[in-house]
Amino acid sequence: QVQLVESGGGLVQAGGSLRLSCAASGSIFSLNVMGWYRQAPGKQRELVAAITSGGSTNYADSVKGRFTISRDNAKNTVYLQMSSLKPEDTAVYYCRNVGYTGGDYWGQGTQVTVSS
Image (tube, rainbow, N blue to C red):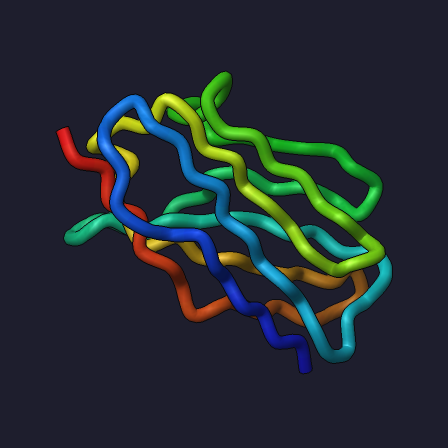
């Protein structure tokens, strides 16, 4: 089992910044992908950004150039630096850990609200 704990959400004005953190603990495979997803009210959950254990990254088009995903493998922690936030970024943000040889875990989510 892997436990994921997100932190760093909150209320911010449009144009502002936030940094989300997700700390993983438990039976973590050394080779894995960690990602951030978000779900706005009435919408499907969508991928925001993902990063492999080797450091390769992938971003949704809507956040490219504004968000940066990074990870600290020694701390089993993934970060999402969000800048130039827009009201449409408002959502619950979830952390996900997928092991290359098995396992798919989600965090409990953290609310991000961007006011106009």
